[in-house]
Amino acid sequence: MIQGSGRCHYHPERTGLGICVECRRVICRECTTQFEGINRCASCLGKRLQALEGPAERRDWSVGNVLLALLGVGVVYVGVWVLSTMASGF
Ligand SMILES: [Zn+2]
Ligand SMILES: [Zn+2]
Image (tube, rainbow, N blue to C red; front, side):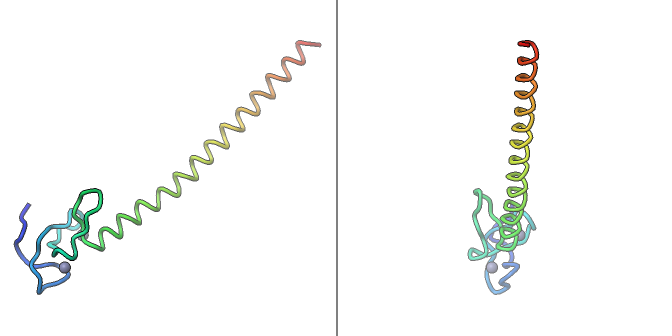
């Protein structure tokens, strides 16, 4: 990791202090964002946050679908069990 070399990709007049782990561009102190303890430039952080938000919503939906499916299976199972109990009772 080469640090302190070159100029910021977004600010050519500023000295680069770090390197974005996503795009490997040299970035200055103001462009450096620390998220999850990792240096990223502002645009890559935005993409990272979008990526986090996107799948999270879909995950919530799938969890809801799984719960609904489990609920449906449980209702059918209990229904079959009640029917079989009633049938054996007669
Ligand atoms: Zn970047
Ligand atoms: Zn900069």
